[in-house]
Length: 165
Image (cartoon, one colour):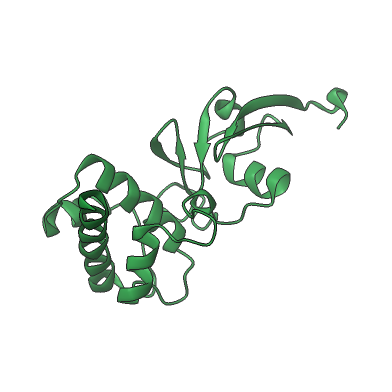
């Protein structure tokens, strides 16, 4: 990349590995993840931070990747949905989404999965009201909300079982 073109390099940890990327000042996190790393789990949909499809964890906090400037990732720890699997093993949340059919088209699923991971890290035994409140910033156009609630409850059970084992 030509630094004279207004680009700058940032360095950060992506899914547990140190990386660097050349970015333009206006690039958002989703654009950088897709263009520089071929990661397409976070998807820009509304472009206004209202739907949750572009959710990415930055320093352990969920952010709207469509609104988060890539430059702000400099020095940060960035985690995408692609990092949740362990080899071929799905995370308990991913497995619960499959078992309950908590998706149809799947467009919103990565954002929901990351938010559920964060929810269960903060509250391992959420009530249905807790789940609804925590996920209120994520939209599913297919309307699989009842299945998503079941997936969160099942994931909480799976996490509890694996911790006890």
